[in-house]
Length: 429
Image 1 (cartoon, rainbow, N blue to C red):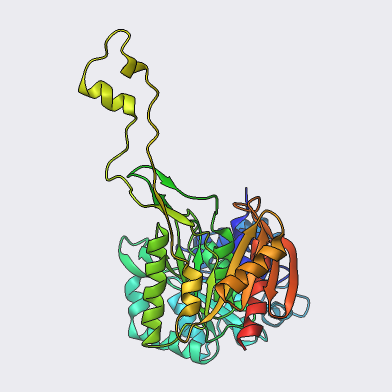
Image 2 (image 1 turned 60 degrees about the vertical axis):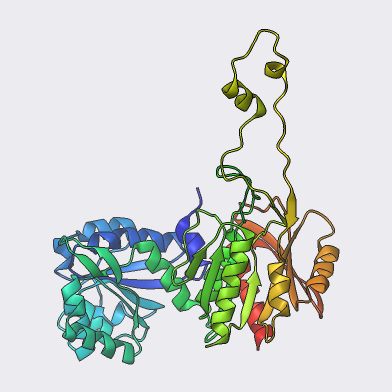
């Protein structure tokens, strides 16, 4: 089974040394899973707990999961020089506090240090990331909001909180993000912000063209490449809108998703986003990754199409030797009409964004990609070998533009997406 943490982080956390601070609160149990997910993403994790956290999860649990001794006492004599707050904070890529209680957030905002975790945060050289977790009223309290605003102003990254059911039985803001959401937020935080300030519109997945209410024409596209690109763009600092055909994939954290079924619906959604952007902030880049059906059924049935034999038997009883009962079911006639070319239509718009297309070919990849780029009049097209890459986590990409052909090689789709985003960012500049 695919490792979701690895897929989410795009290798951004591989080799990272992280210090995980765990505060008191029921969300501390999620921190145990967070240790696992961070390790699966390639990071090493050193856990530091507050005294309150030990009321919810034992240090033994975190030591077993992380493979490292857990610290909680600022006078811990396991540190040779007696300065655990200094030694533990050195040599780490980031200090991550999850869950972060209202109490600790208040301490950090006001420069208070009365235990190991708050003291090492004061003495740190590494950046600090805080994932709040508390009751909705504690989160909305003016003092908490002042403290959070102060931390942001001081350069501390705040991730979350989420919204939903809380341990107290109430519903609202204040939940700690789920462990995999934190992993993805950290991956985004570490990524170079080469797309900072850019707005991107991306299509992904297949389209589904109805024959009747239960049947349709579609293709094998899983949407994985498009979703990987949306995630990589967001990690790179872009504001991303994803127009997606039918797929079971999770929406990348921080990405706006618009669900559609057919090619016409996808066209309408893309046009609506571009029209909206024309009246405010323009869209800088349109990446058409979706495998849009070339044709749709011109005469879809409003009800399920029945076999001829079923309709005949419903109208009169069958007789012995009845030729009608032996007659093979008639094949319904489907009239197909061509779907609009979404990418070419966007490229023709006045003040069009920078357009990137995709070409999945079974042979003569470069030749067909070059022809497709010229036919659609776009600056860049990305070729990949298909359809064997559909649904898989690996791909092979080739870039075709006015400058010629450049291979990005073969690899996992998240890694290739990061390389592609870097290429696109250079062209946008």
